Length: 503
Image 1 (tube, one colour):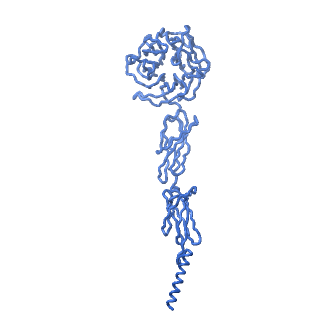
Image 2 (tube, rainbow, N blue to C red; image 1 turned 180 degrees about the vertical axis):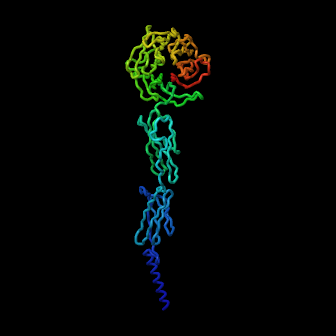
Image 3 (cartoon, helix red, strand yellow; image 1 turned 60 degrees about the horizontal axis):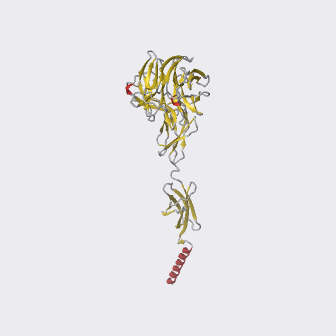
């Protein structure tokens, strides 16, 4: 009987196990499947190769290319599902595995920088907002910090009040930046953007500053660029022979030459081609406010590059020539008046008005530039004196001293004449009205085979400024400086430059 009972019990136990295998349970333990998908929280883009850990079993799988994962035959109970991937914040989700249903979870992962805080709004420090009369080199400074001490990168945006240009200076690592070659008289507006490479850029408020109107330069000259003459101004340090604060005053696309400054009006007059004619224009010392003076009668004569005009002492008028006639005109273009006309058919190429306003020096020549003469006339056109006449070779560059007692000019003593107006040995001379004597101001310091051209007195009449170049007619021209006697070593003031003016 006992044997029969044992056999029946064993049979019942086997039946129980078979039944459990058929319905997913083993004894009292039940099993199910857990599936899921991992995506980016921003945009719900599937994430591949994410490590999925199931706790408390610590079973691990990785997501496929579609972001899917699956745990098969896990015990029915509550689990914590952890998603881990480099560059993302760990994500946890709870899940209850049931034998009666498919359990599916979706884990949305955030980039690990999602909790990163942005840098502070840049505080613009210098220059002060609205400040005026700054030099044309300005240092911008600002302050910004980052809560996580991330590396910060800055962008400066600059606008102005004279055109529509927007300048962006990028990839700045320091909290300062030096601006140079700013336009005189211009107002600038600036702001700063900062980024930590994680968050959206943070933009500062906008501040402004204005550059002083007058560069304060006393030297004016011309450079040839791309076939056009371009006017510049600069300062020059006598102590170390150093050029500084160079400012381009005229557009490189226009032909502008022969700058002449008047200290009373603080204007620069110059020549410019307009409709195939040479006319006088004026501009401020910063190159702004260009005004055309002449209109009906242009500047004309032997050679436009050799011609010169003059301010009246008070800056109210300008003197210029048109072939054999000398005219005066108000600086606003009104009041055109004929002053003098040659009687022998010669042309007037240059003129200079004395600082006391009583006399005018004019240089005349024939149609080829030769047979030159320098005359002194009064404002009524009466000839007061003839400084020199019948000069065979080239001559020019006349300039009266501030005292009116001396006249400076250049003359080719070789008496060479050529259709291309080539000069072989042009030297500087000073005529003294008191004793009617001539001094060779080029002296022995002038290098043989060179020409001294376009001379001007220094403002204190202690020195001369002029152009020196080889007499081959094609070599570089340099603006140089010497004393009135020409017996000291010459100094190059501006290389590759012509037509100096020193006021």
